[in-house]
Length: 508
Image 1 (cartoon, rainbow, N blue to C red):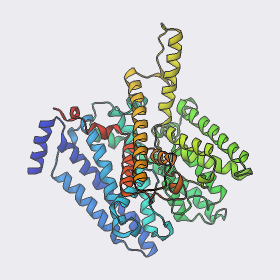
Image 2: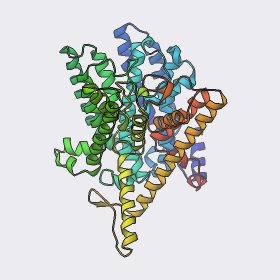
Image 3: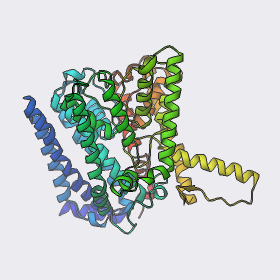
Image 4: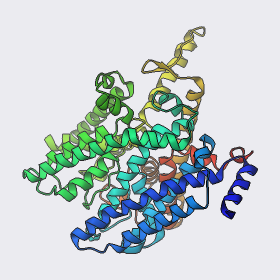
């Protein structure tokens, strides 16, 4: 066919099998189309229109099948084509996920807003441009929650199968015991990893739905209906933070909030560790894992700081100070983005701690975003080693994580990734601040930095009008586009996208 011949000729010219990459993208994106049937079922139950989801599903299936038909060679692709597959697939998923919004949600009728909301869901960020959530139909709200849940599944596969093989940010060392050998095609890796972890992901979601539903049925929290239980479970396990309630978790009972704190911690744990510890029946691995132990310690210490600050500043007192401090600290560290209070009204120190945690993140291999805790652990060990070797230059001290040595190439990759991440974060903050200043918007530098941190890290809420009870709607179209790009870059850990803009990648 002409399309296949053209793709093959281009692949020979540039040294990248573009046809094979597009073939894999088409074969994967068509599987998004059945997901649109879920909100169709919700729409039928609530007597709402089903056509937006049917049209979007048909368009997604038609595009995927058509792309798969005019290309070939997905069985041949490897790591070099993987950058194109990952970058293109994630963008297209967000584009097709935005179709129901454009078709039937007045608040998201503009493509720039619809793409922001869709990217926020599939990147499990949880930021929103909606200003009147109660006005959105139940089926559209559930589609919004489902995009986050599906994004979480994709992230687990991406983090544990694809990015390590592409040597992104040192992941080849951090996950070398979890990934198949390099001789395996990328498509095979994706299938094997999906079978391994999707069952666990679904099981944890089902358990949370059951617990939240029970809390509602027993009268402990009558606001926790089955709809809300499913919606919040989807967002929790994906560390997304979307809520069908205008004020997030604030209206719900303390029991509901504590249950969600537990599941946010679970979602912020490395799924490879969860799989080995739970499915593999080796719970001792949790105690041995450095990242897991340090993560719990950091969450506890940060929660204590916030709680003490809230009480000493007379913002909150007693049990509410403890609950709100712990809830929002865990939410920000795991990059979930739920809120049970408007921390816009808290002290500067509280905001600094919360958004500092947004730069740290939770465990690698989880659905959380940001830099990831393990990279900070590795850099801290590198700093300590450098100090030791300054005093004792002859000492040879290999750096180890969980007893396993990490090679120097991976260490360099981690350092480069962290500096690149911070550079993109600062650049995004400056661009948004400059655009807002030119348009006369009242946006402070810290609010601009918070918006950049929260979108690049997949956290969700910002400060000011974009706070936990607010919306990103006041940003201009340009700023909205910049923040959408930050969500996209942050979720893919920046490098796969940037690689596509280098001449060496395409050179034969």
